[in-house]
Length: 228
Image 1 (cartoon, rainbow, N blue to C red):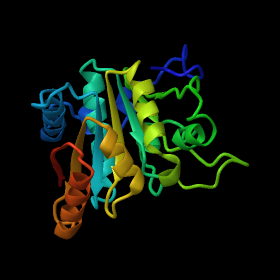
Image 2 (tube, rainbow, N blue to C red; image 1 turned 90 degrees about the vertical axis):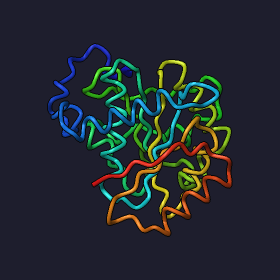
Image 3 (tube, rainbow, N blue to C red; image 1 turned 90 degrees about the horizontal axis):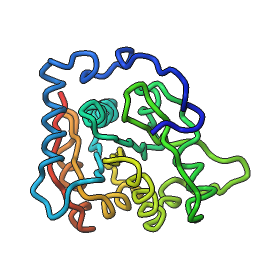
Image 4 (cartoon, rainbow, N blue to C red; image 1 turned 30 degrees about the horizontal axis):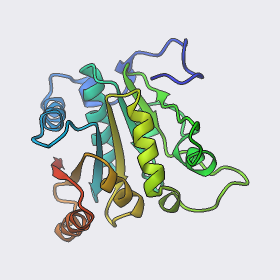
């Protein structure tokens, strides 16, 4: 899971991470995230879920935290997991997991996604078996296209296949209120989609629009995570 830059280094204790599944593993919150993990693991679908999109519907600052806790719960259970941040407008996962914001997805999509041998190595986190692909930053002199245009169907399929060769589960995190085209591209390719909504904050109309948009592209909408 570790990249060449982090391999061989001593990683700090995961206890420094402000994630409830690490900080308070016996708490109600941690148990709730583990319940989501088991729902994904044992969902009644045709094939085991190896890739999923956690889609934020207007939960503001809580969706990234939820995605990080869900991914961490898989890793702490021994499932090698890669978390991919698609939220270019508010890329919080790198800070939550104490890793660099780049290199990441934008660099790979800008320079090598269409090359068969172009590898995208997850950045190792403080949690064994959990790696992160951060959003990344613009490559100087590279394409000025937004992430939504860079994340094509073929690039997404290649990314899932590549990451899935070394990880048990690939989890994407993106905002879908308003719905983003990169989220729809990924939703059409992954095995399952889970909506993250925040009680008292997420608008009912936003949740309904997100659900309808995902259903129109044939996404496998598995359920909803309610925060707060």
